Amino acid sequence: MTAPSTEIRVMTSGAFTAAHLALIPQLERLTNKTIVTATTSVGTGETSIASRLKRGEAADVVIVAQTLMQQFIDDGVVLAEGCLPVARSVIGMAVKAGAPRPDIGSADALRRTLLEAKSIAYSASVSGQYLTTELCQRLGIADQVLSKSRMIGGGERTGAVVARGDAEIAFQQISELIPVPGIAHITPLPPELQKVSVFSAGVAATSPDAELARSVIRFLASADAADAITKSGLEPA
Image (cartoon, rainbow, N blue to C red; front, side, top):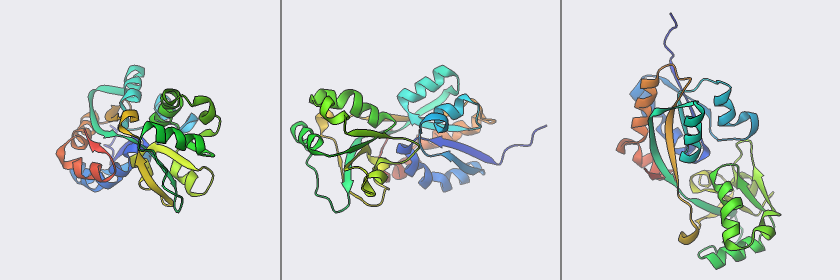
């Protein structure tokens, strides 16, 4: 007979990372288990959450954008039962600390800022997909902007790239920009161009204790987790 695990393994996208880390003490009291954070980014390639789950890497709770979660459920790597929305997230931009504040308060202002920027860093997840497949097209500047933009993979935050001077503008979920040192003027996109993403938590198909994992998810979706979620730059679902 296999001994029960003393750990709960969590794979979370970057958008929910700060909230997850802040909630670990409460989760450990709730479950009497050690919370192990297996990854803090959706990632790319072989290190991505999708690749890890598909090759059967052990996990209990998975937290990603709802669109990706549905794909995981369809692929059979996350269970449909017990999957719950835990937060809503908006996209923002930031520049290196000390740089002037960019004006992105309207569609016209955002268009000018993107055209004037020398280089733009975007993420491998939902905010980057929105920038490259919808936003620039809606603004009519895809050809000019995408040629000077690059995707930041491997779990690195776009803000870190801007902080060290390798790009002028960082474009990512606001909750992923807030914890990054060396950046400033974290500003949401104008309301008419904002994309609100829902992030959900689900039970990994490899979890040895699906019911315990579901109890973690119910906590993350409850009012008890709302304060930490709000402080991280997200809105409780």
